[in-house]
Length: 310
Image (cartoon, rainbow, N blue to C red; front, side):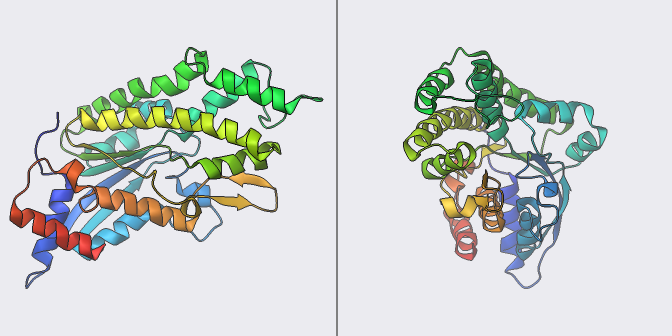
């Protein structure tokens, strides 16, 4: 179970209290961001957008906290890829060793790969163009078969990419702890919203709303399973905190490539701001009940001051 206080949130809030006094106090921290395309700034190459790790660093300045960012997010990464990265990439390893705070946002690709390869293995879709169905496919029948395939918890790809998340997370956390015993670790995983994912499947496969909703519902079951692994990892590891980003509204997360007609589920600029706010809240204000195991009246009052600022 978790021990007490002294997370990054504690430091940030304490610095905030000092900064409201006569002389501001500046604290310098090193921040390493790990994850997939949501974290990777290269996802937005050519677009004048800012990623959530950059936003976090900017926002912390108002509390006189200067955060040096080491962003190692890589588009397409699954939990297993992050594990391999932190075991073999010397630059990443050194940044983790020197970090005060580490964020991890990953999991969507685990589910996507599990779905793609499960359906392809069953002959329901074709690779490498996973949105391509064989000619003369009976789509309604195919969708019924697909939901049965995806619901099979004994499916090899489900075991590898979804159930395997639990072991990956355990190893990621233990590996980070080998390098750095003190850093606060904030973990977030795949977000899910039924209506949006229904539209995504409609755009990708030209399904009807009902057909798309069936696949989206099954995606949601897998997303919930992965979320639970992340929540457990946070609950049973000291100084590891779960960041809940599942309550963001549809508009904050998704954009669509109208020219190509294919759904793009990467956050737009508003989505990056929303994701930044979720991590920022987890640092102390919005998720204080999850982070702080004991408080005093004075400390509760201090948290409220920061909450009012957010």
